[in-house]
Image (cartoon, rainbow, N blue to C red; front, side, top):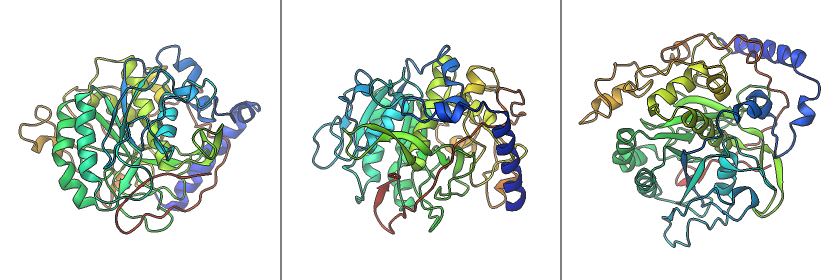
Length: 399
């Protein structure tokens, strides 16, 4: 699909959404307890079926402060893997705490998360900002998450040294695949500048997540490429203004960090409703029910589409398929010795022509009045956060 045609399709979808959505939706959605995407996801109805209960999400980040009202009782002990450890509950930066709140915040006096029944496992790997030689800590963090029973790992951070990360994390990612753990990672916020590839989002076994704004379009800063598998809301998302102890607010620009947290939370909602599913089945239904305005084809900007957990939870859409067959990373898992799953079906990895690659085990997207088209309603700006040429950094945006 050409850029012009894609823009036209998106515009038509947005126009239809604006003419069919209730006039009060935007007014009701502008609070940290009820962000705009809650209406899109029909979250009140979803919570009647699942809140993410029983699912542990590891947040590999700057630590998580469990004393915030919305995170009290939601956070496990975790571990601190930094050079001068102070404990996983120390977060001098606030980034990890915001990601945890987006996933599992209760909304009590602060941010309402998408999966408030989920449990957060904090793994502190940085104090925030740019640090060197991080991939070995990430690998240790992944192993810790597996051993601690996490079903989902959230990486809202990135490293431009992809080859180093691939070498350091190879064993850890293999272990995650064999232990049925899903890993989501932010693709980065330099799409409107360098658009540099980064890790861990571009590594085999990691689901890369890009950001869309509340119009359902890729946020201009969202890094794009064949590493993108899914997209999620990244603008006008809840966070904390200024210091992490400050009041909850709606941030104009959450970035791919926030999008990744919402993708992780979406997986938690689905997995809690279907606890017997494997990671392959959870990911498959996420890919096949994602919102795609481009005739079921993936592209390098939003991957297979924007996450829609409500379609799985409420509408029963998405065939989970073979529990042992990964919807993506099939060749990689097949080459593991022993394989992570029995005899996966070979796949052709997305390349330069990924725009024409159909969704895995593709099925039609929802066409019901409740789920189509997307009611992405508000609007979001974007500023530039450019990755450094060396080192690693949090994929974060500040309003």
